[in-house]
Image (cartoon, rainbow, N blue to C red; front, side, top):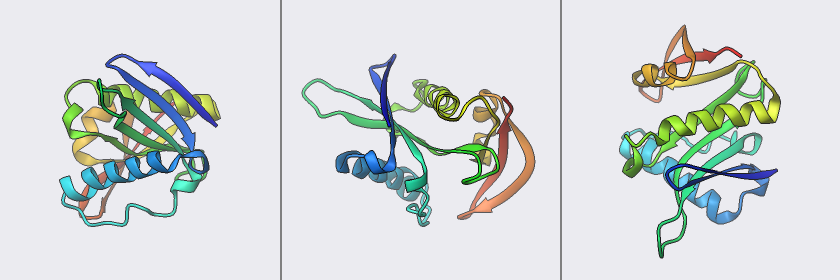
Length: 162
């Protein structure tokens, strides 16, 4: 399954299953995840956790004149029962150069819409970095009181009701 939607800021959204990801897109998303989650956050962890083949991948790209498309936003989506009893969104990321532009909020809206399109209206659970609680709260996610440490970073489970 592959669908593309355009968004403001010149960003195009593509939703694609793992086995349909072209090699260049797979490389770009793994590189972005490593740049942010491993290098920028100084966190050594196994990003390639075996779950990517079960996910739908949401990619936000933008074109710059005379340049190839650049991956600037990404999230992976799971049906209910894969990561949590509810559908879930994870590996939510924006490239550092586009932060504070509203693209992160656009990414969450696109991810919620994609979950609904793929699997219907339902609750969505996330494992959020605790420092981002207010950000996710703006999109209807509520802390369900299950804090935990993952890879040395404070996290909490949050759920968005349908």
